[in-house]
Length: 419
Image (spheres, rainbow, N blue to C red):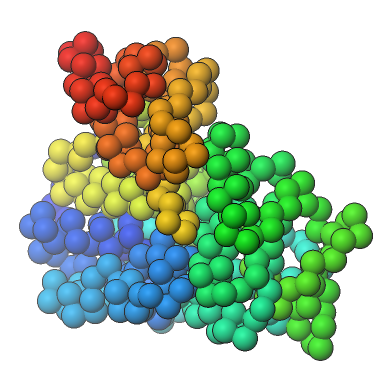
């Protein structure tokens, strides 16, 4: 990675239209940076939040302007040259400039926050009208319009996006079938216990879930999608199909510029890439996961905000911001799932509370070290788990199981023992 020196910088360019890009710009200005600041986004709107897209925005409960991280007027007031609808096409590291669809933009320091895109699957019929993906405002506007006249939605993929969209579609009165290739929902991100909870939750809400699903093709009816054909011969009627099989990092721009990439743009703890003048932040990066002593890619608002701040701080020669334990969340129906940490490598799962009550938490431990927590409608467990994971604390499994013992007390005792 590049060196840690921080010479005076008067020209920063940011590529991206999401949380990382907006956070980097806001942090630079809030930290006293008064130089030229250009933000290039290939989307037609200012940077916006993506988590509400599959939830409140899809259901029509949140207007588009409330998705915006900052209103357009803020960028003008902060003297940020916001260029929406401008696509970065190449990075010239020798000349320190970005080639775009509208010309050339120079930089002294560059922040690449190109995010991610929906993963594509080679599925016959996926180009039919009525087949949607979900990553942008335009995607959701199209899906919402499709659902307005639909009776049946098939969701391909049972990750967070797929299940959140299924819950939103049920709220709109649409029949939903979820098709998942893996043997359980959320298989890539959580435990069998949490998977079983969400399968039961959705089925009680009228969603049909088919796991181990092998899709042969999407069938047409009257020139648009009409059903999903499975390899076992079953045909699932569908007026709309949502493809939600994960995302891929947008690294092509960085790769073409010669930046080191491996499952994302490789960055150090200051969000600095293999080129000292270039930083990267958000879904597109592979970073050091300091609480787990390994490299990885995080797809989360927390990660985007944290790396946006890291990049800004390093550019200005400021101290590195505190590195928090990773956290995530998902809202489905009346249930809020809050996740602290990463559960990979756990050797024990401790349950706190009764899953039937829809208010409980699972704690994932490696020995007596807390790695992660899945909290269902249990905010205290989530809040204190984040602190314990960040501190590398050792915890007592018996105490965690005791619902009569407040999490605040458990956390205080664990942190004191490790001090």
